[in-house]
Image (cartoon, rainbow, N blue to C red; front, side, top):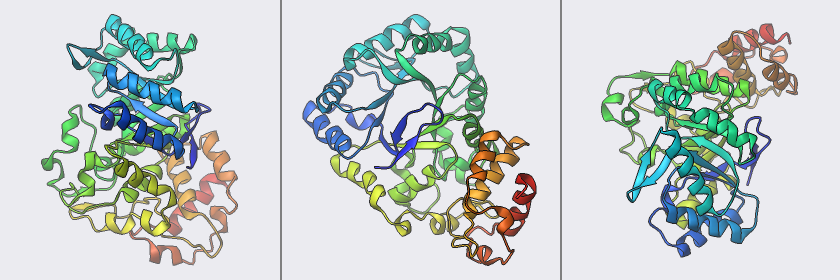
Length: 381
């Protein structure tokens, strides 16, 4: 299992993690079988948005039995009431629910305290005004959580939240269909058929800015809905073309700041399908041809970091140079972290001889030679 840094948290997390929804309404034997198999194969990260107490007790039991380092992002503002899940922004309910979560897990500590489901400005205002953000800070100061996170589907609200400087981990919905749509407070628009009726061109600027800001600020992204709830794996996909699990995972993992894809497995077979990414070859991971074939959707002229431009005769990592160029352009300056990562490249944009071979391979018609010239100007070599 490949491990990735979770932003600037200092945590190294498995690039394939787990969602918890597939463990709902299951028994301890199922949990031992599937979660146990995941841990044995190197998975060390799991999202825990669901407040179901039976789920928490089962997961806690298996994690303790395995006796390995395992990171949980447990949610604040998610509670169990009258036998069902509810979201709350009332501080007393938030505190009680989170303490209950820890008790049911059988622990006094989790790696990430994730502020739950913030998709609107109103909700973020409640998080701040009702003392929930301050409560998260106090939990971190007390060592109950190591880091503060936020889950959202709306890039505009997520951007507002991370700019406070208090959010260290962002759980966000990332896939090649959702990335085309503008921010909206109604999450259901992400999978509504009418959202894809008109032609869509390139990544939504707010989403691109969000990813690049996270990268600059050292905020690690954990990905939900990489498969679009499974829709992207079928011909009913909003894109009109079925993708594979490997393609969806690779797309997410090639976005800036992404550390971990949370797979919502519902069986051992689905777990193994996601984990197969770790041994898949480049051809199996390649999403470029599929994305280029989407009807009514175009990424023409936009680098997707797919790597089809390689190999460069001068051994330039063209995708990496382009990613750093885009990060700098999005911020209007060259952040120190971007400059240092660029300096670490073995070959720089200035090594480009403008042969243009890379452009003949690019499925998206990117003006790579122009990008190399611009990167040389911005970075100085």
